[in-house]
Image (tube, rainbow over all chains, first blue to last red; front, side):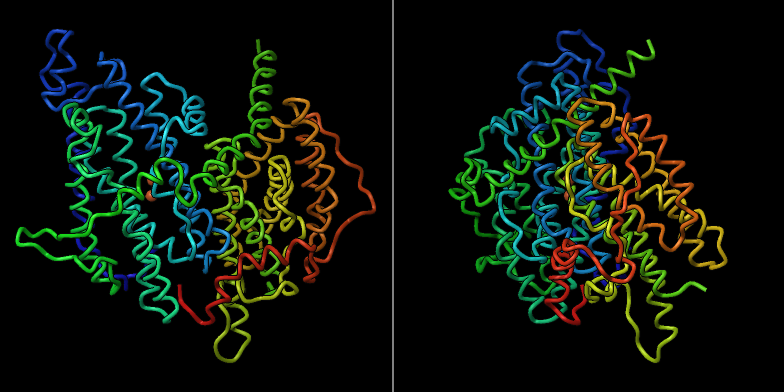
Length: 344
Length: 239
Ligand SMILES: [Fe+2]
Ligand SMILES: [Fe+2]
C-alpha cells in the first residue's frame, strides 16, 4: 500500500518487536499467574508478584478495579474523541488514496474504542454509563485531541507524533497485569504502528514537495510537538496515579521515562524527514539520551480542565451524535422486542 | 466496447456516494454503526478508484501523450463533467435518509454489477465481480436497518417513510441507461418496504434527471468545492 521510496523510521521496528514479545509471553501462559494457585486470599498478590494476569472472574481489590475502569474508559474515550480531529480532513483529503487511508484509520480508532469499552465492561461497568460520564465531564480523554487540525499536514503530524506517542505509552500496557486490557493493547498497538507509519509517510511526501507543502509540514510539527510531549502526563514529581499503578503492574514505566523514549525515537526520525523539532535546546547527552525542553504543563492543565481550543467543540460533537441517534437506538430496541414477542 | 463516459458514470456514482457516506464518520448513532458505515464508504471509494483508473486508461489510449489519472478525474473536473446520478449527491439527511438511500443504491448496484460481471469487457467484469461481493453486504446492512426503522417506533417509522417518499423519485434516473434492471430492483426493494411496514410510493411525474449529462442538483457544487479544495489549491503537487 505504501511507496517503497519512503525511508525506514529509526526505532519503529523495535517497538513492534516488543508488542510481539508481549504477545508470545501472553499466549505461552495459562490463565492467571504461573504456579500461583495458593490461598485464595492472597491470589491477587501472588499473581501480581509472579507477573501473571488477573482475569475478570478473579478476585481483585476494589481500588485496583476502580483504577482500571478509570484508565481503560479514559483510553476508550480518547480513541473515540480522537476520531474527530482527523475526521475533519476525510472530505478534503488531497488524493483518493489518502482519503481511503485516512478513512480506514479513523475507522480503526472506532474499533479501538470498541475493544477498550469491551475490556472495561469485563470489570462490571456499562458502555452507556461510561459514555454518559464522558459527555458530562466526569471522565476525561487525552487532552491532545483538544487541539485543532488546521491543515492537511496536521493529519500527518497526528499520525507521526500523536500515534507515535500513543504507541510508546501503550507498548508497555501489552504486559499490563489485567488480561483483557493487555490483550486489547496488543491488537491496538499493531494498528497504531501502521497509523504512525502513514503519518510519517504523509510528512515525508510534504517535506519533499513544493515549498508550500514543506512549510505546511513544518508548521504542523511546530504546533503538535509540545502537546505530544504533554501526552505522557505531568512530570514524575507531580504524577498522582503513578506509584500505585506501578505496584499493581498496570503501569511499568514512569511518565518521564516514556517521554524520554519518545523524544529519543522522534529526534532521529525528524532528521530522516528533514524537518526540525521546535526545540533549540535538543542535545544528545553522554548517556545516549536527548535532553529536551519540557512542555508547558500549565497549558496542559488548562486543557485538562476544559479550556483548550477544542474541548467544548469535541464534546458538543459527540453529544450531538449521541442525541441525534437516540431515535435510531430506540427503534432498534423496539424492533428487537417485537421480534422476541413474535418468536415466543 | 465500454466508453469513457460509461465508466465515469459508474465511477462517479461510487465516488460521490462514498463522499456523502463518509460524512457519517464520528456522527453515527452507535460506535458499531460508525465502523459499518465507514466500511461501506471504503468499499465504494475502492470501486470508484478502480473505475476511474480504468476510465483514465481508456481515455489515455485514445489520446496522444499524457492523459489523466484517477485523481485528475476526481479533483480537477468541474461539476458539469461529473456523470453521477443525483441520488448519490443529495445531502446527508438523517439516519433514515442514509439507510434508505443505501437500500435503493446498493440494490441497484447489485443488479448492475451482476450484469457487468458477466459482460464482455474483461477488466470491467473483474471490477464488477469484486464489487458484487461488497455490494451484497451493503444490501444486507440496508435491509436490516430499513426493517428496524420502518417497524421500530412511531418516530422511526415516520422518518423512514419520509425518506422513502423523498428518495423514490430519484431512483428512476439510475435506470436510464439500463431500463431492464428496474424490474429486478423492484422485486428486491418492494418486499423489504412491505416487511418494514412502509408504503411503496406511487411512480409520480417528478423524476429528477440530468446527472448522466452533468446536470446536477444545487447540492453538488458544495460537495465538490469541499472535496476538491485542497487538491486544487496546490496545482501539480504530489500527496
Ligand atoms: Fe487508536
Ligand atoms: Fe491510531
